[in-house]
Amino acid sequence: MSDDRRAFFRGLMRSAAEMTGPPPAPPEQEAPPAPPEDPDALTAAEVDRYSRQLVLPEWSERAQLAVRDAGVLVVGAGALGSPVATYLTGAGVGRVGVVDSDEVEVSNLPRQWLHFTPDVGVAKAESAAAKLRFLNPEALVEPYYARFNPAMLEGADLVVDCSDTFETRYEVNAACCAARIPLVEGGVLGLSGLVMAIRPGETACYRCAFPEPPPSAPSCAEAGVLGPAAGVIGSLQAAEALKLLAGLDGALLDAFLQVDLHDHTFLRVTTSRRADCPDCANL
Ligand SMILES: [Zn+2]
Image 1 (cartoon, rainbow, N blue to C red):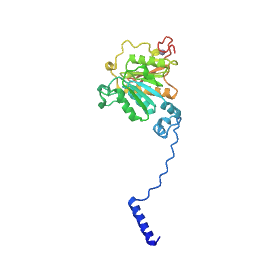
Image 2: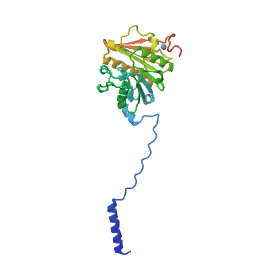
Image 3: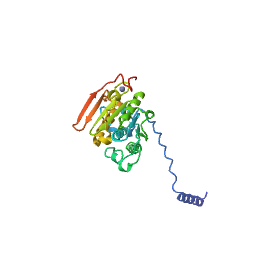
Image 4: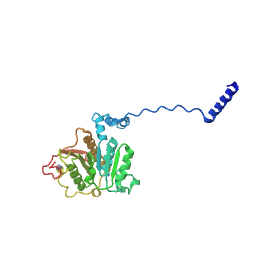
C-alpha cells in the first residue's frame, strides 16, 4: 500500500473514532457473589442497630438471634400495647403480630402513643403496624383488625396481653395454657397496675393467681388511667417478654408485680400453681 493510501485509511479510522466516541471501556469485572448469610450470625447492620443492647453483660449475640427468630403476638394496641410493641419491634423481634378490634379515638391519644391525631378513625392494628414498620423495617409486622381468637397463636413463641378487660385476659390465658405458649400479662388502671410472666405447665398462670375477676372492676373509661402509669406497666411487660425470649434470668415467674405510682410502691407478690386451676392444672 502506498503512503498516500495508508494516510487516507488512517484519516478514515480517525473520523470513524470521532463519530462513535472513544472505544468502549473493557467490561468491568463482575463483583464476586456475596457470601451466603450465616443464619447463625448477626449481619453488620444488625450489630450496628442493636449495639446498645449487645454490649450489655446480660445480652449476647445468641440472645439477639433468639429474639430475631421469635414471633410475638401483642393483644391490644392501646396504652400498654404501644410501649410493648414499640420496644419489642425496636429490640429486633423478628415477627410481631398486633391484635386490636377498635379504631383510634381522640380520647386514646394522651397515652396510646403509637397513634397520632391524623389516625383518628383508623383501625388501631393498622395504625400501630404502620409506625412499627417505620421503626424497624427488618421486622415482619402483622396487624389483626379483629378480636383475639386462639387461631392467632399459630407461629407465636410468646404472647403479651395488653388488653383492657378481664374477659379477654382470661381468654388469652386459657388459650396460651392450652397451646403452652409463654405469656406476659399486664393491667393498668388509674396510677397503678400489675405485671406477671407465665410459663404454662411450669409456673402459675393468670387464673392460678386470680381465679375470679374482682366483683366490681371499673373500666378504664370509668376510672381513668394516667398515660405514664400505662407506660411503666407496658415497659415492664416488654422487659419480661425480652427476658423470656432471650432466656435471661429473673423473669417474674410464680409471682406478680404490683406497681403504684401514687407512692412509688413496687410490691412483688409470690404466687403458685393451683391444683384446681381450670386452665393449667392438667398440663
Ligand atoms: Zn393456672
